[in-house]
Length: 167
Image (cartoon, rainbow, N blue to C red; front, side, top):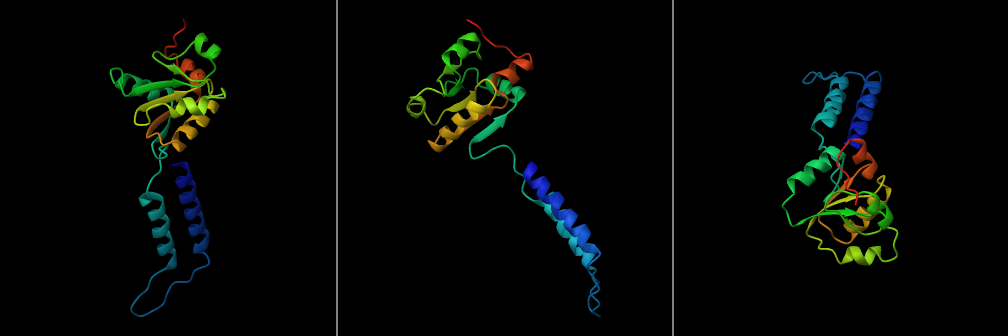
């Protein structure tokens, strides 16, 4: 969405700067000022352009409160998987309830991801969001259909005082 807002703002800026360079059309049948045409086009671009959210073809970046809602909405859903891509040591120091651990840095990560059911719903996280972004990209490339990436990872989740299990 930010990309389209920047493009729209740029379009409006260009249109406003162009106003001083246009002369009105002086035709007996039509008296239109180019300034108004530019303004209408700029407003059209800003308000009617399709909006883009953080959904990237089955991949969504979600903040901790959105992730918490996804978890709550899927408590009894056997098709829902919480995937922790941190190391086993990190996982054992604290993780989301019900999470499955597959180490992103392990040599066999790609093959283990390849064994997962691509039709399931996944919430993926790591410590800060870097590894989960890589994991999500790999999962998307392998044909997974529904993936949510917890932005900021477990550290962002914990900073919102959301529950972390320690064993």
